[in-house]
Image (cartoon, rainbow, N blue to C red; front, side, top):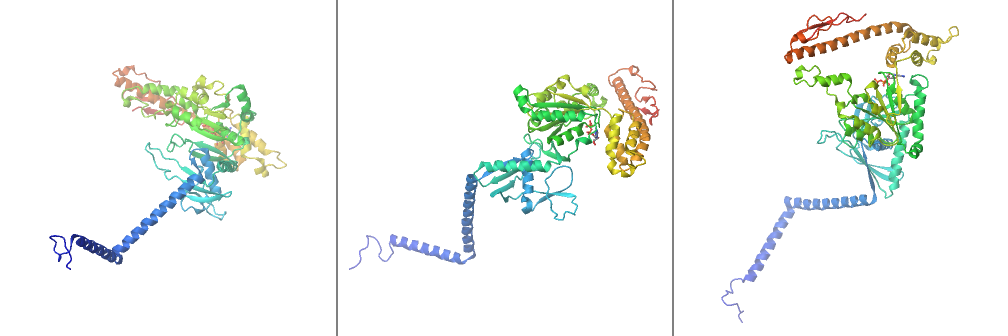
Amino acid sequence: MKPQFPLGQDPSQPTDQASSWLASFMGLSSMFGVLGFLSQSYVGSSLKLLMLGSLIETGRRFCWWLIERFRIQYSITAQFNEGDPAYEWIVLFITQERVWKRSREFVVSAKNSQRKWAVTTADDSTIKCNAEYVPTYQIPQLFKWRGYWLELKRSNDRGAVNVHGVQNTGHIYVTIYTLDMDILSQLVEEARRRYAEVNRPHVVIHLIDSRRFNGIQLWNNVKRKVRRPLSSIILPAGLLDSLVEDAQEFLNTEDWYLGAGIPHRRGYLLHGPPGTGKTSTIYALAGALNLEIYSLSLASNHVDDNFLQQAASSVPENGIFLIEDIDCAFPSREDEEAEFSTSYPDPRLNPNALRPARAARLVTMSGLLNVIDGVGSEEGKLFFATTNYIDRLDAALLRPGRIDRKIEYALSTTEQTRALFVRFFPAARFPELETESEKHPLAELAARFAAAVPPQEFSTAELQGFLQGYKTRPVAAAQDVTAWVEAEHLGRQAREAREELRKKKAQLRMQSQMGGGFGMPATNVVRPHGAHAVNASPTATVPPAEGSATAGVSATVQ
Ligand SMILES: Nc1ncnc2c1ncn2[C@@H]1O[C@H](COP(=O)(O)OP(=O)(O)OP(=O)(O)O)[C@@H](O)[C@H]1O
C-alpha cells in the first residue's frame, strides 16, 4: 500500500517537520562542529581560561566576603588618630612589639628633636646612627600579643593635602580578633603605661603644626627634651620650691576643689625680661611633676578665638596648657601707633606698610578669657602663660581665678650670677683647683665673677652665653668678665643709638610725607634737634651716645 501523504504534498519532497528536524540537526552538528573546532583552536583555550579565571575570581571574592563577615562578627577594630595622645601610645607599642620587622618601607630622616618612633636597624650598638628609620606600615601587619591576633593597618592618605590645603594626618587601625572589649582596653592601657615609662627621662612637648591641623587633631607635632633638673634653674631662693609645691598641691587636691565648688584649674603667669628662665622653669616643672606640655603661641597667624578654644579643650587632663608671649594678643603702644598710621590711603605714604600684619588680632580679649575660665577651660589643667610685658595685659586677665599666681623674673642678681658660675664649674670637675693651699678657690672665683657683674643688668641667658665660651677655664672666665661687661655696655649704647636713629628716621619720613602728600606746607614739619633740613631729602643727626660706636652718626632720610 502506498503511503498516504497530505493533500498537495509531494511525497518526493521532505515535509516541513522533517525539514525543521533536519535544520536543527544541521544547526546542532554545525555548532558542535564549531565547538569541536574551537576546542582544538587557540580561541577555545582562551575561552576555557576565561571561564576558569571567572570561577576563581568569584571564589576569591566569596572567600573575601566570608573573611570580612568573620572579621566584622568576631573582631574589634580601633582607630587611632594622629594628634591624639593615644596615637602616640599605640605607635610606641607597635614599635616595641617589633611589628616593623616585616616592614619593607621606611622613611629615613636626619636625627632631630622631633619625636618619630624610629626603629633601630643596626644590631651593632657601636655604630653611631645619624639618621632615623621610621617604618611606614603601608602593608597590613599581623602580629600576636598575649595570645591574640592583632592586625595593624595605616591609612594611606597621610601627607596628602586636602581640599582646604591642609595636610591630612595619619590614622592607625588595630583589629583584634576577639569579641572581648576588655582586650582593647588592656591593649590601650598597656600602650599608655609603656609610653609613660619610655618618656620618664624626657619632657614631652606638644605643638601645633599649622600645615597639618585639621580641626580635630590639633596637637600634631610632638617634641621631647631631656628632663631638666629643677636644681639647674637658678632663681632667687625659695621661688622655685614654692611654685613646685603649689602645682603639686593643686594636682593632689581635686576633691577639695570639687567639694568647694571651685573649678579645678590653676593659672600661672611668669613675667619678666627675656632670657631670665621663664620657659625653662615650666619645662623643669613639667619634668618634675610628670606632666606633658601643650604649647601655643598667639603670634601664629592661624590662631583665632575658635582655634584657641579647640586647642585648649583638646589638652588632656593633667596636661600643662602653655601660652608663650601672651601679650601678643594685645596691641602695644607702638602697635597702636602703627595701626593709626595704617589708616593712610596710600600705602607708599605709610611707614609701617611693610610691617607684617599682626595676626594676634585674630584672638580677642573675650576669646582668651573664655578659654581661660569659660567654656574652653577644662578641669584638671594647669595653665601657664609667659610674657615680657605684663603692663600690656588687661586687668581682667590677671584677676585671681584666671591667673592665680604671678611670678616675676628679673635680671640676674649677684647671688644668681654666683650660683650660675658654680653650676658651670662644679668642684668635682676641677679637682686641681681644690688644693690644700688654696681652700675653695672655685668659690672665690665665683664670688669674684659675681662681683664683676653689675646686679640686675644682665639676664641669666646672657651670662650663660658668656660662660659657654669658657667651659673648661673658670679662672679665665673670672678674669675676662670685666672686659666683657664693658664691651656689652658699649654694644648696648650703640644699639640704643641705632634704635633712636631708626625712630627719628621713621618720624621724619612720615612728617615729610604728610607735608607733601596732603598738601601741608613743608614748613609745618618739625625739625628735630640737630637736623639740618627737613624736606624732600632731610638729614637728621642723632646726638652722639657716650662711647657709642655710632656716635655722631648722621643719616639721610629718603
Ligand atoms: N634662671 C635661669 N636659670 C637657669 N638657666 C637659665 C635661667 N634663665 C635663663 N636660663 C638659660 O637661658 C636660656 C633661655 O632661657 P628661657 O627660654 O627659659 O628664658 P625666658 O625667660 O623664657 O625667655 P623669653 O622671655 O625670651 O622666652 C636657656 O638656655 C636657659 O637654660
